[in-house]
Image 1: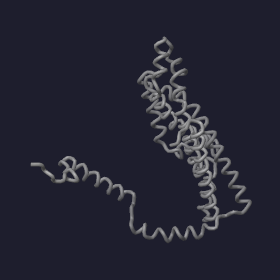
Image 2: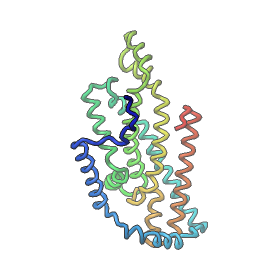
Image 3: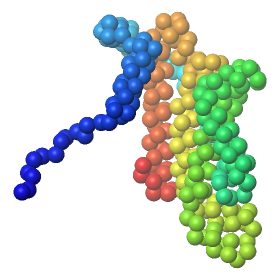
Image 4: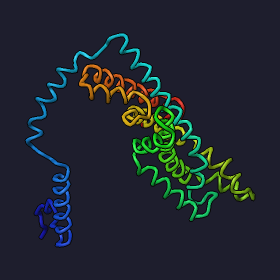
Length: 268
């Protein structure tokens, strides 16, 4: 006889799976407790936020203020672009060493990947603090922080892009007796170039977003104006800075997306 009974919607977990689920729930609850989650604070936050919005609007649109903040935003873009360009350029040779099976021994690739992982693990604002100590206050420290952060980002992805590149041209050159460096320069890098461009544009977007807050630790840019605005309870000026940052970052993202579409047809 055919059994027309509907199957169970949820499979009953095993004892080990049940313990795993329970442990996951306990960890999540523990994390909420450690993060200071409070329904009372959430309930009292909207009136305070409304008070901030009321005190911040209208934003400070005085000509002198806009000129001062505009130059700080220009400095922010200079930090981002200079740091990102240097980071992308330096990432290429580093990625060649990090890519497995190209020109470096396996242990060298693993060491470079570990270093890149360490660079990515340290937040860009922490790198800014390090360089403020090393070279002093100002935009140069911010540029170096963006450069290092870009190396960590692009170095890893450039290496992955070269590993994932079409192996056909490289294998053909290898069959003719070409050296490893010739294969990489003539086949691997050209095959990975579209991915390099896409990753570089994402790195520029990331650099612009990061550079807007480096001023909080004295590494130049408009972030210092945001900090001063809140420290002095000058909320209209702080709101002007926030809106300016939002406009610039969104604009850079649109330009980056347009460039990816025009150059390599990447519509992600």
